[in-house]
Length: 518
Image 1 (cartoon, rainbow, N blue to C red):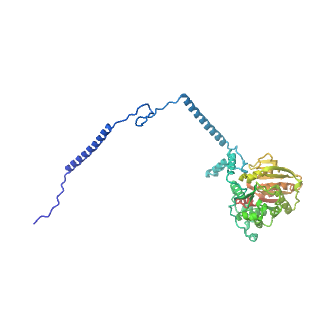
Image 2 (image 1 turned 45 degrees about the horizontal axis):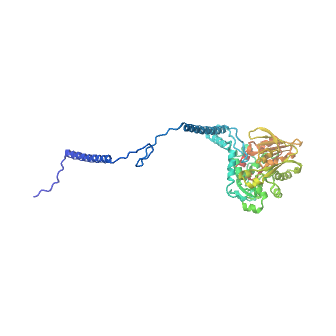
């Protein structure tokens, strides 16, 4: 029987394996060394070309020897040093001028003539504001808004912007505001829309707390509302009105709160001044341009007042005189002639005898370019500027007022502003928008008195009241914090007139500020 094939047994031979591995490595090293030696021999046998000549001259192959550094001559060295000194001096002067201008923290303008507005005021310091960072943010805003050379830079920017495009003389600025729909007047008249309902019997401290808006934010809202929709034609700008229901309700609630607080002590009047578009433009143009019908809006305002508020309608009387100089073309205010027609309506409602306009002496300031021109820089406006005619009261032209810093100062009811900037001529009336003012007419030997709670439209209206009252008080509620009913009682005031532009009265934040003073 044959034996099965057996697989050969692998024999362990560690020494043989090691010897074979070593021999293979030696052969590999020999090949590498041989190749390296061959490469060196070929490199050594290759002919070399040496650069010849002086540094910087090419050899036959084109190689160039590097230039040796050349020493500067004495003249070149002095010129280089002079250039360095001049550059250093110029940069140092620039730094010094910038630092000095930046360091003049309080030598800064309070108002902008170019923009025709008050600039940001330095914020009051509080530890709370310092900790949460709001104080430093406000300082930064004040610093940027009042930088000394900001005024010419803004003027230059507007001059350049006026060169863009082709100006046809007729244009629409803004107009993208969405207004609310006017509710039915009957719905408002039943009291269901009266925000003051249920608060009539409450003391001021018991009324719902109102968050007072920031003055800068409120001013920005007002500016945006005034400039929000403009129709510009033939060198004149017309401002449209956009109804906001909540703001209107809040404003009327504030007036109602004051009326309730002084009931039996003073009579309260409301005068809402329409924008120039509602008086001067025809119905077809108003319909084409959009916005809210100002007549209907003022009627809605009036429907929300409590019965004790005497509403003075001035829209139709102004429309009946719209061929006269009632509003400025380059500014959003009315003229004093426009304010006079409102004064006549007030006198009729209050039962007092108006003083004829021709019985006053007047001053005229030509070349007035107001807020519209400051914003638009319209060439047609510059070519046909406005004039301001101001009528001086017969009783007195003296007044006292409190400025924004709380200082008690003396001024004039009508100031000669002929040497002022031509965009400030409207400030001829009662020293402009001051927080608190008082006019005493000693030619009136009675205790007649009136308080006007107003925006800037009231400035042209107030001088007309001087001959009718012994004491005329003026509060610009945007710039002061006090309790109006307490002020009325403290000074024995018999009449309170709320005179405000219809746009401002319906602007966010305005009514909240007014309500905080009730």
